[in-house]
Structures are given as C-alpha cells and as structure tokens.
Amino acid sequence: MTYIKISKTVLLSAIASAALIATPAFAASNKEVQKCRTAFTESGDLDMSQYRLRYEREEGKRTKTIHFTAIPHDRTEALDVTCTLKRTKVISLNAGNGEVKLMAANSKS
Image (cartoon, rainbow, N blue to C red):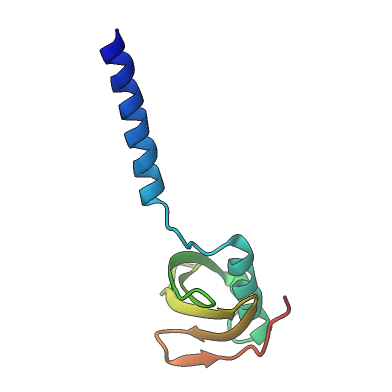
C-alpha cells in the first residue's frame, strides 16, 4: 500500500514538473498582444480586423520584440510581423519579412 501511494505522489510530481517546463517563461501577456494589434491598426498600413495573430516567440526583457504570424481570415498568404515594446509603449512595428516598415511613435498605453 505504501509503495502505491509513493508511486502516485512521484508520478503526480513528475507530471506537474513537466507542465512547468513546457510553459514559456516569458510569454507575451494579453495586454502586450493587444497593444501590438492596436498599434498595427492605428498605423493604417495593416487592418488587423482582417488577421488572426499567432504568437511565435519573443526576445528581450526591458525592450521586448514579439514575433507573430498574421494569418488572414480569407486564407491568403500569412505575414511575419514583429512588434517592439519598450516597457509599456510600442516603439516599432514591422510587417512582411522585413520589407515593409511600419512605425507607430509611442502607441497609447
């Protein structure tokens, strides 16, 4: 009986540890994603109501660059987009494999 209880405890601990390891440590918050989406829309160059954003990765801590794939609702070609935030302000936007630069000077926080 004791062996079975210990085994269950060890198994549950292992599962919990694996779940923590699989979770990205610095995943972008919903607020940050929304700020990027709003900044793209306000820039006027990319209508975000036509796209769904899929989080890819992020770089940096204080100045954070978040990489997304913008997937159009009409299933045409997806765009690689990046949004750079310094603390809470969007300082730059980039869409389409680095070819199109979009600048949003200090999006509203």
